[in-house]
Image (tube, rainbow, N blue to C red; front, side):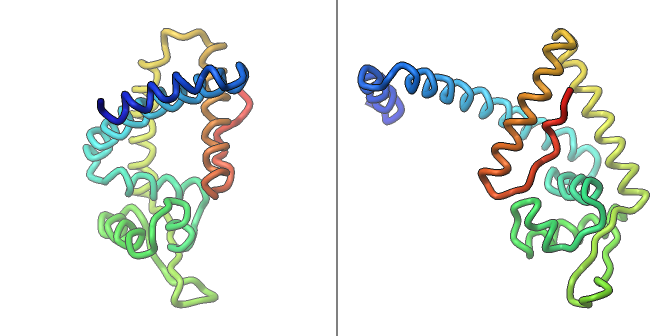
Length: 178
C-alpha cells in the first residue's frame, strides 16, 4: 500500500475518536489545503509563462512590486520581504538594474547599504503587467455575483494576512473591506 493511501486510512480510522467539531475542522483544513495548493500551483505556472513574456522573472516581478508597494527600501528589507537571502536578492536586483527597472544607490547614513527605487521604466512595466493580470482575473470571476467577488476578496485577504503573520511577515494589506 502506498504511503498516501496508508495515511488516508489512518486518518479515517482516527476520525471516530475525534470530536465532531475537530473532525469538521480537519475536513475543512484538508479541503482548504487542497484548494489553495491547486490554486498556487496553477498560478505558479501561469506566472512563469505570462510574466516571463515581459522579460523579467517571477521573482523579479515580486521584487518590483514590493519596491513599488513600500517605496524606496534597502536591499536587506527587500530580501526579508521576499524571503530570500541577501545574495539572491542582490542578483535579482542586479538584473532589474541592468534592465533599467530599478535604480540602486548608497544609503545616505550608511554607504555600505543599498537603497532601491523603481524607475519610470519599472513603473511602466509593472503597470502593464498588473493591468494584463487584472484583465485575466476579470475573465475568471465574471460569472460570480458582485457580492461573491467581494466576499472572495475579503476571505482570501484574511487568509493571506493570517499566513503572513504565521510565517513572520507583516500584514499584507490585502484584507481591505470590500
